[in-house]
Amino acid sequence: MAVSTMTGITTAPTSPSHITATTVLSTAEPNIIESLINKIPLPRWALIAIAVAVGLVLLLILICIIKCCCCRKKRKKKEKLNLVSINGSSTAASLVQPDMEDIECGLEDEKRGRLQYSLEYDFRSQEMKVGVKQAADLKAMDSGGTSDPYVIVYLTSDMKKKYETKVYRKTLNPIFNESFIFQIPQTEVAESTLVMQVYDFNRFSKHDIIGEMRLPLGDVDLQHVIEQWHELTAASKIEQERLGEICFSLRYVPSTSKLTVVILEAKKLKQMDAHGLSDPYVKVQLTLNKKKWKKKKTSIKKNTLSPYFNEAFVFEVPFNLIQNIDLVISVWDHDKMTKDDQIGKVFLGCRATGNQLRHWSDMLANPRRPVAQWHSLQPVEDVDKTLGLKTRFKLPIPSG
Ligand SMILES: [Ca+2]
Ligand SMILES: [Ca+2]
Image (tube, rainbow, N blue to C red):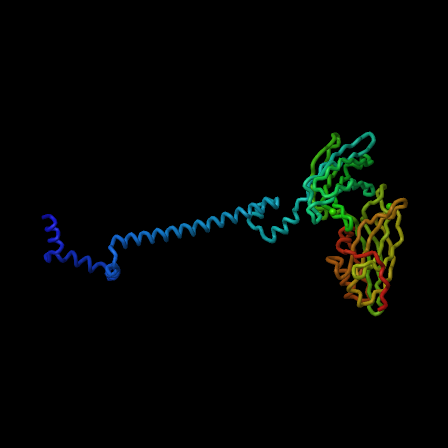
């Protein structure tokens, strides 16, 4: 009964107002969808089930995509962290930007290893006993991933007295256990610096410096025996020791092929002898295509750190060769009993840089006119490395 009355209500023509209102309010689209659904030969519940299933699949795909993206980012971060820990640097900068700039920075701060030393000063005998104990985690300098380390030890107060340990082949953790005695008056200790340089021995090429440590003895309490580890640093950075300055003039006359070098004077030269002075003289050398070519030298000025030379040297250099030569000016300390020491040097030429290149170009730009200039002497090893001289052969003087 109840059902019949219900159907009666829905179909009753007496209440059509409600039904027509809903159909009018709803847009035409539901009608189209409705008609489409009606056309599909499936029951309505099946269609709803399919729609839900499709929705779920789409949702799953979406979740998968989001998850994959996150994972990739995380993995990248992990890789970055791993790289950082391998390189041994843990700066915030390397975490943020591990690109070219960092690689360059990394090279500069490259770990060179550590050195264990001991220090003992005997106030009675005025002797400094320096022990070279061992080194650890040295930088590999040879292609096989190892080095052949040895250590050079000296005090800056007496540069002539340099000791060397034995060479240990193919190791980055050598145990030296050697000690060396330096005679040094108590009054000079505070101004002296202990230098230990770790080198890699090479049989057929120049020995490379792995790193060095510098210990200003003024900072050290010598009342006690010291035994410590010290981090090695790059040698070139610290090697800014004042070697002195030299003034010379250059003059080139292309028509006569004459290069005139006048060594004028030097000042603030480094003390090389025990009594606090040096016996300087200057070598003027020409190289041609990286080979030693011509050489001349000044007289020796005894016991001075500011010698005055005013000595002129004339070289024949044809104009077509001027681009290929280097002029090397080196200041030496003469020693009566032992080999002379080089104090420092500079080189000029088209390959030179900075002040040296400027002087050379000034000379070329002002033919016939002497151009004088002061130059700061540079460490011998640095200049030699840049020059990269090939052989010791003397070339015949070209006739052109
Ligand atoms: Ca080596
Ligand atoms: Ca001397």
